[in-house]
Amino acid sequence: MRTQVAIIGAGPSGLLLGALLHKAGIDHVILERQTPEYVLGRIRAGVLEQVAVDLLNEAGVGERMHREGLPHDGFDLCFGERRHRIDLHALTGKRVMVYGQTEVTRDLMDHRTAAGLHTVYEAANVSLHDFDGSQPRVRYEKDGQTHEIQADFIVGCDGYHGVARASVPAGAIQNFEKIYPFGWLGVLADVPPVHEELIYANHERGFALCSMRSKTRVRYYVQCPLEDKVEQWSDAAFWDELKRRLPPEDVARMVTGPSIEKSIAPLRSFVAEPMRFGRLFLAGDAAHIVPPTGAKGLNLAASDVGILSRGLAEYYGGAASGREAGIHSYSQRALSRIWKAERFSWWFTSLMHRFPENGEFGRKMQEAELDYLVNSEAAMTAMAENYVGLSLG
Image 1 (cartoon, rainbow, N blue to C red):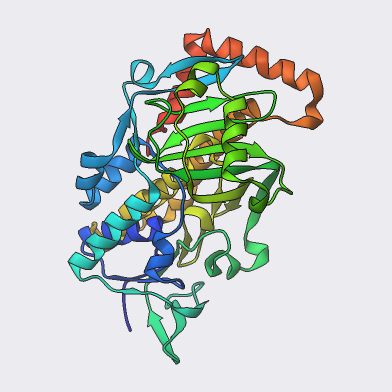
Image 2 (tube, rainbow, N blue to C red):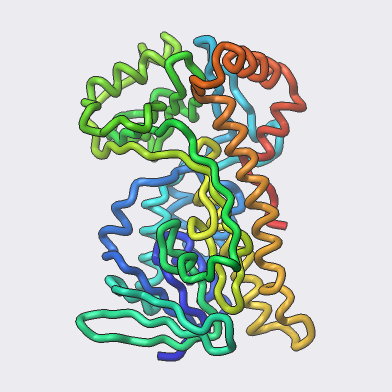
């Protein structure tokens, strides 16, 4: 098979890149090692920056998001058993959209099916070849047969554990990583949200987050030790612990119910540099991971493919002079935005979680910074600008 762009990974970043390339008239194929049902079953992010919303609109998949998503003009920081609102719209003129990653993926899948675009699911033993030359190839196995795709470019959207980054020679890439000494225990439940906007809580027992996916489905989290197992946490134990970390008025208003899904996620900050190796590009979790505190993971993946899709559109459709400028600058432009989001996510994580090794001094520093933050319009503006998302550039 011959195509212009071979995309590895049919998560939201690969699917969004495919939709943007299709709109630009660029031939491509997507390979995914899992089934469509498995991809849709992943429970992930739920807060979209304006940049991500704009890119979904550009790709022609924003209709259901605008119909069913929940625009939010702010969120609450909770500490000392009091909530303090960060008014995103008043501070920045922007808002965010609460719309689950599962729904984004479903919309992109439906768009791809309706357009008759080529996706190979359950592609086994994917391998990348000759991407340091002019004729890169991708091999995979399907239904007992080996297949090969010849492409102009390969884009790795296959996540942290995917084959794309692993195919890069060790000397050509530099990894930066921080592992956090705790995890998030998350519960998905079909109950009404405790509050109309998100609540981020700093409590002596640990961090908590009250988020949502719709007006009838919530995603709540509590900080927990890394060594904890999901089996240790009954639904009742989770709800009891969450209530301990929230103000009494929220506890009184909270509706509890059986969990649909329950999991513990470790937290890490990770960046791989650069993000281009000859004719191979990395995007999304294949190149970077952020702790979920700042809601940046899906949004960074969207901005990556937004930048890359424009570079590829320029390459295939632009004037002969400078037609490669977009793809040459992809890594530098993407990393500039990525490192700023990494900084914000690291700062917000450090501000809101319990770090036992920091002792009482560390606790007092958090209290002082939170008090300064909610009483300084300049500090709140800086936080709001980062939360709603920096411009694509």
